[in-house]
Image (cartoon, rainbow, N blue to C red; front, side, top):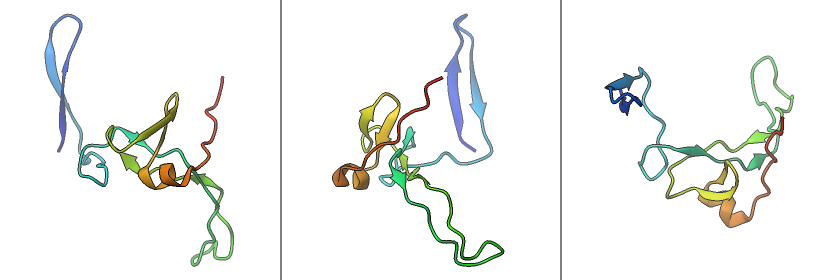
Length: 94
């Protein structure tokens, strides 16, 4: 169970623990980002939706700060997509 220490503005300290393991980058470091490169829809091979195509999505590979390539505000690419010069999906503007 990973735990993260924190300090409140008042100076009080504590820990926040979760039950699930922290996602890690391929290099083994804790993940800080996910790849935002678009991926094409994939053909579903089995199950009740076999033959249908999934919606396009993003790569979503977990990345540490060292392995991530920053391409814009809150937009990162994994080493594979950065080397390919992948286009990045625009962020939603509210």
